[in-house]
Image (cartoon, rainbow, N blue to C red; front, side, top):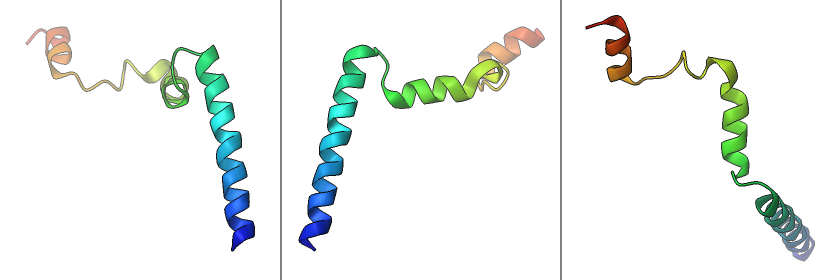
Length: 59
């Protein structure tokens, strides 16, 4: 059991260090950058803003 706790502690320490360095370099966090990358070019077409859709259709 102790071995698993040590491995977990080392993993948390490495992850925290990586996250800290990443946060110092980038303004957006990792989750926001992944969502931006996934959304890509289709993000505008998949919007759910009803007011914008109605204004575009002229209703």
